[in-house]
Image (cartoon, rainbow, N blue to C red; front, side, top):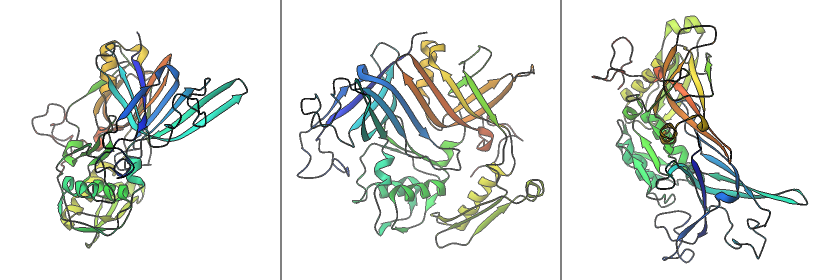
Length: 406
């Protein structure tokens, strides 16, 4: 099969004034009529790799990253080349968009949206030059701002996070998709790193906060992170999306049978599983800085974590897909997948004739792209960790299988 056409664009003109943005909202620096002019550098692109996501749902999403390798034989990407096409416009924090089309360019699907960190001009020998461009998504902006005694009123988690983003010292752009939230955060006075504060609210909610592949700041409330619908099925028998390889893990790296949580101004809440402790010894998960407005809510969170991690089950940890082996429609399905989506993975293990099938949550997405190859690896958690009972669902509404959420 033919590969999707990947496009790499860089905004070399970054003088646009963007209200409420920490970087592009400076008066007497940016221009009211300025524009971000994206230049297509695909023809000079040698390779692209991206990495977005988290290790597992008990962890925070990290700053997404991308690395772009560019052909620099004509020195056009050398910031010191005064006759270069982009001289004076090569700098950090320039906007970057990586996307792909499967229909000849009528519609493009995003892969990564972010900003340049560094330009590294490489001279491997006297006759060659490449440029390595390292990029981060918008979490980078939040990770480099600080809250200074910011008062945040008690609110549902979505409004609480919006209040942090609206703070003058943060000035985060309006590109947000923030759900309401299922828990209420207590009033706080925050003096800490902005991203850290948002991720504490994320954990207190047991939701998900990440920068989507289109660059939008995304908050999913707790109930939205529960598996509900299947976005894709990966199979090794030719019936669905084929994959190159997958790995299965059975380990104790996420085994917790003694959960101890405490909110600001509250009492420590504990949930434990004696049967798990007898089998695996005591494995403690502890966190003491939650924002929830009641000890009862914190106790529910502790019980939720205990229900997920008191037992150890095999899980599919990653699935690698080669887009050359997919039909055009299948390529579109893969390009549409996003963090937190639920997928089904099927395999008939070597030496057996019985197919194993599991529902998995996408925790991370890693692309490796060259002119002749496109592979994507989905990092996954077994959905049984977060599989809560959903009424009227033929997949997740089965008694004696799903857990009770809150």
